[in-house]
Image (cartoon, rainbow, N blue to C red; front, side):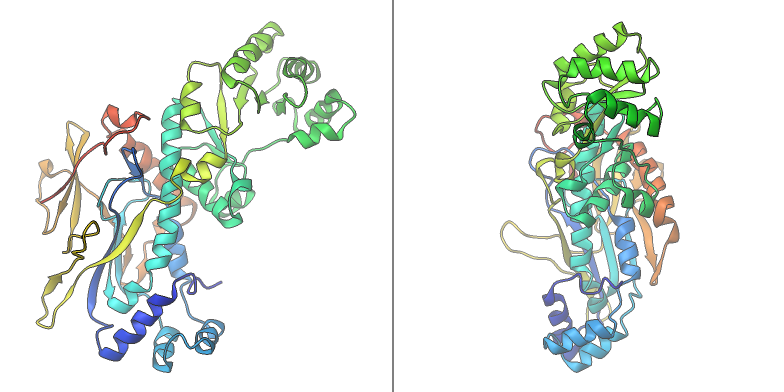
Length: 430
């Protein structure tokens, strides 16, 4: 399926006018970045890059798409011919997926003709704005969990395709699994899930429901114990599955108090190794509040897929340079109040001090070379129209997940605070 019409009309009308005036093929540089982080956040997490590259691979105008554009009189016939032949032939560099970003970080740098690059604006923003918002929220939840596993369970709280994207982004940021089967099939993410309250309510008794689940899934399953009375549910769960019961799930009540009561009851019943997992509208603050409770794992849904209050990362896509008539690179940028942009081709470097991130240094010219210069942030994503394959699929996700874990370890300790604050490191133009 083509991704070509996952875009805004004005991108095509710009190309139509630019082709007519002879400016459309002018070599240009676009950058995707966020002017600021969501209010109070100290860092953001880049996610969606692999998804964007796969969509770019399928960005083709076929006969159905061209017929629609012709029928709606969106562009001229000559522009329809240009679109029919469209294949991105430029280069894209960007922050590695899983990388941290800060205000004005050039997360994606697209170099191509104006027409080839501007047409990707909506596609790039729609993917990276959502996926990065989810990954940024997920990273905060993972930090709050302190090493305890978290499962993504938000499919019923967002659009069907957004649910798959959210599961992918959360996994990159450190979640352990997802309930979404399509995310498991498409991206190789571990899946989890057992039963809902409806399953228990189907049977004549809670015990009968538990027996059916254990017979189907084994004693290592997770039994949902709060359909009726939690204490009775725990007792019944151990009665049915024995001391080897894998886990119980709690989805209601004061989770901290209830988890302590359940832990004590399980231990008293001899099920000392039975784990406790909790759900019920968790976010990073609720998870942090449960840090001292005997909780073994968490399941998060609504808060995750909505970015925990920031459902879009606020990223923008701007032209920053193009070749002038004399063949030199001309920096360009907006001057409007509150929305000014810095023109010029840029090279970002993460300045480190004894292995700890100290600043986001953005060089408008080439950055210095040497051990003290910091860690260069741009990696190749597309070279002369050819996608870098290792950024795609399950292998790309595994690399992004590992990279994210490594860069989180670079953050200064205060960056992990959940309280509102300024970005963890400053952005400096050099």
